[in-house]
Image 1 (cartoon, helix red, strand yellow):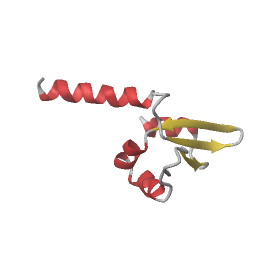
Image 2 (cartoon, rainbow, N blue to C red):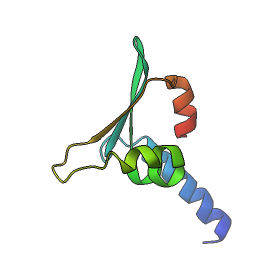
Image 3 (cartoon, one colour):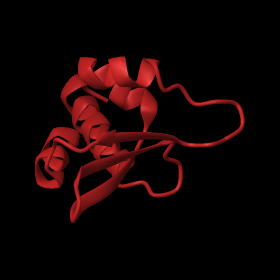
Image 4 (tube, rainbow, N blue to C red):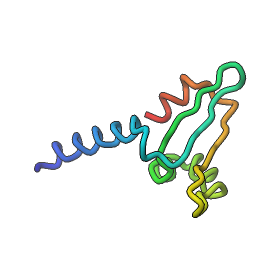
Length: 86
């Protein structure tokens, strides 16, 4: 597989992971009432793709009890966060 094809496949895989509703390990509550949306995501991807979320996640690590990490970002509009997440 050439590098270009590999990168296209990798990019598509990452987009598929964003839409995965089964294997997520963090929820992110975005917005303020009544405009709140909860996104499901993957801690490791957020950690490596965003220095801001890395700081939040490093203080909110998942415990061994299988309870999901939950982050609240009330000052971001859900529509804006959707764009950031992608």
